[in-house]
Length: 508
Image 1 (cartoon, rainbow, N blue to C red):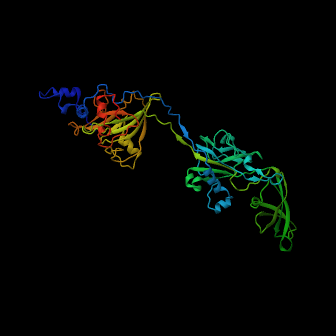
Image 2: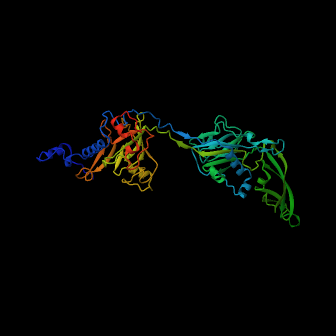
């Protein structure tokens, strides 16, 4: 518990009972009065009489307004030619070949990101033929438009359409063949990375045939970047494909035989995809004298052979994919919020009255900015060379440094950023009050009476910068370089004594 020295009326009343009591007795004077008196005497003895107009740098009005809500997004750079080549070379093969080459990819985005930049990386040059061969050399990328992103996990493509258009966001003016008006970058805010799709102008259907590649797997220089790589495809749901194949009939003649069967499947399937389908056919049983249903996997060569297309209807709108995901590549980079830079008005350098032979003015050093418009004061703690408990605008400076640097071993007796003790980054905080001036920002030191002035208990002393009196704090500009520990200010800045005597002198 803090004990406060007897001061003021109570001290005078007690003094009246003793004929030998003097008002100058330090035992009954305020610790603040004693320490400041010692400090004043030591300062004048060292630097001479003080210019009565000396305001210690606080005379200049420095308040301005800042829109603290005007945050910007730190924009990601456009894709370079070197980056494009690295990614293209990594994915320019089929998925099977990528697996064989240990090139990693996923068919789902690794994590959900809400705020990110979409950046154009590559527009493909692969050409395609329609399934029926009526049109050849179609540039796939020229048919890929209208990039959309899924906003939630329930978003889906159903029969070529968005299941819920409200769950998807259209990236305006962003097509495979161009990215008009945005210089290659488009910012997505409050979006998602659940799914990606484009609309194909050839079939007017949405397709989400893509893979995701982590830039860190491509090259260390691309860490933090992800690449969505699309494969072009077009479909015609009204297309019909007539197939023929020979099926093994275990109930056929001679204990089993191959029987040819024609069959039709709605839509078009590449032969490799068709082999994964199960198909049911009726084959004549010699022993039972009737048709029996058999279900085959069309790729099972022990039971199905000579699988081929007999006819394709509507194949002029069917364009099979080639399983190479380079028709359109875009980059996803999480958007980093960049707060508007605080226009700190300058630094305030302080002496904590803990000694009268040390004028290094680094017991606490902080920058400040008063935002009168929004009723806030911004503080950036930069150094703490004192070993007494000390607060700036109510915040204990050692505790704040320790909070931000839990492994630095900082206590209230630790010197910070003054050449002794740990060197750490400045610490910023905001006070919900606009002080009337920079001199009015309270800097308060806790002093032990037993060590400084006699008596018992502790006293809270606010450091002052009063015109014409020895300063416990000085305001300087942001380019001022602080003194190292126990480096007297006049040894670093030789014009300091002249400035004390004449406030018009430029001393640093």
